[in-house]
Amino acid sequence: MGKHVVAAVDEIPPGGRKIIDVAGRSIGIFNLDGEFFALRNSCPHQGGELCQGTISGFLSSAGPGDYRYSRQGEILRCPWHGWEFDIRTGQSWFDPRRVRVRRYNVTLQPIHPGADCPPADLEQGPYVAETYPVTVERRYVVVEVPG
Ligand code: FES
Image 1 (cartoon, helix red, strand yellow):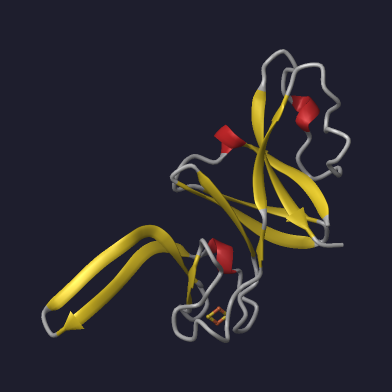
Image 2 (cartoon, protein in one colour):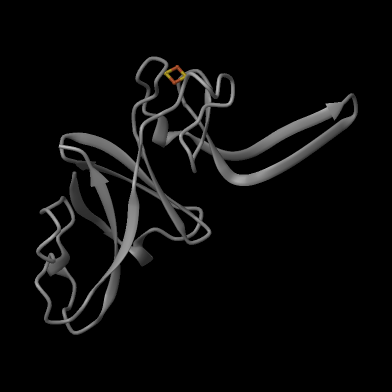
């Protein structure tokens, strides 16, 4: 399991996303009100670029004339054929038990001025921490990718 620095925290605002290539995979990083999630940018249906899709909420109905819209900003719709996935869990909404998109663990880590950049337990990723001034402490988004 390799840990990769993929972005500075303030680079992906709430409601925002960043799609990066890391360890040979395309992965989308999403910020849901300060919580970060990572999904593989490949739809389980036919491999569409899922993380480029529209982000919306969940529309449910208890019966005719009753509609509830919830979880705004947490549902991702594949741009190819419209399958929908929960950004938090990777679960699909049409067949939650059988179909889900690969998700990855995400942590936020501070990198202190004067520390190794990147820290020793992190692998070199596409994001180069050295491009930021080391006099400013920033937090970084770190994603864990197998292999
Ligand atoms: S490839 Fe995503 S819905 Fe078909």
